[in-house]
Image 1 (cartoon, rainbow, N blue to C red):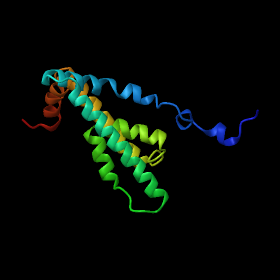
Image 2 (cartoon, rainbow, N blue to C red; image 1 turned 120 degrees about the vertical axis):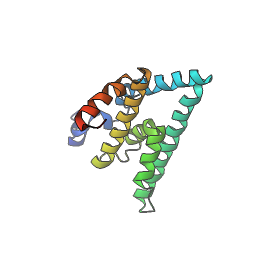
Image 3 (cartoon, helix red, strand yellow; image 1 turned 60 degrees about the horizontal axis):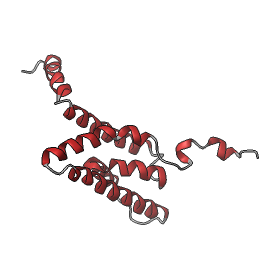
Image 4 (tube, rainbow, N blue to C red; image 1 turned 90 degrees about the vertical axis):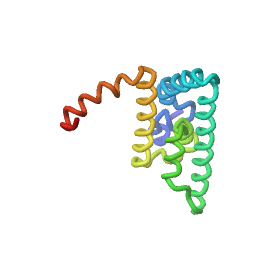
Length: 147
């Protein structure tokens, strides 16, 4: 059977399945949340906050998609980004993949990726005892000339 033009042009991420890129974005933040929770005496608590924020973000994406299709009042992008910043970015990645919302708007995707990179940087640096941030301090002082 011959493939149509649309089938040929579709990328694997648009055909369904699980967004594999999420698998390499999650280990550091999840590990950091488990370590943080262990220090708190309840290893699951921070991790459950990530799950709750992801569900909330996914639901907001779904609602906004439906509103966009019916020309109704939209959820501001700043609200969606705030939910991502507070830990809902995995839900946003899943929603972009499954709901197909905010997946082609470059400016939106850029801010989402900045949030994902920031979460991963903070998680990795915290797990390393803030070694990266401490090594950047003297460099920043040298570059800016401030004491």
